[in-house]
Length: 182
Figure 1 (tube, one colour):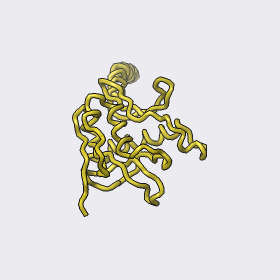
Figure 2: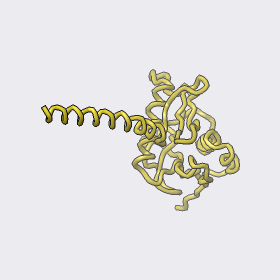
Figure 3: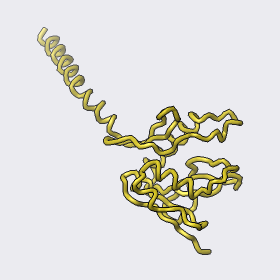
Figure 4: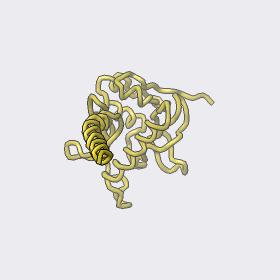
């Protein structure tokens, strides 16, 4: 009989401890940093969030991909997953632009350093757009941090813009143009 009471007491104690611990675990889950895809002001948006804030990163306004039945929501989900992968698994994480592996499409991509070539796709740009890729990277910076982005300017250069994404999301100026010599 004594062992049954001890067992009952242990089970009750474990349940009490588990319920006391559960709220703090949920609070920790809400403070992790990363990207989420959700509608913001009616537009699918890849949003960066941490314990202090949410910042729009990419607003999915283009219908590029629509002919292939590729929705803005699908692009948002896939790119948000890539951004999270690069943030977790690639340090440092620089964003720039380049061409797809087959050379057909302009892309926004990740690389390991200033001046490095594309190492991974972030997302594909519409090849028919008249907006230069540097301007698109600049626009992303202005969406995330208007105080830092506009100071860079888009010079009349073919040199790619490189952004250390981690530093940039912390509000630090981390973007620069890098001209490669051959």
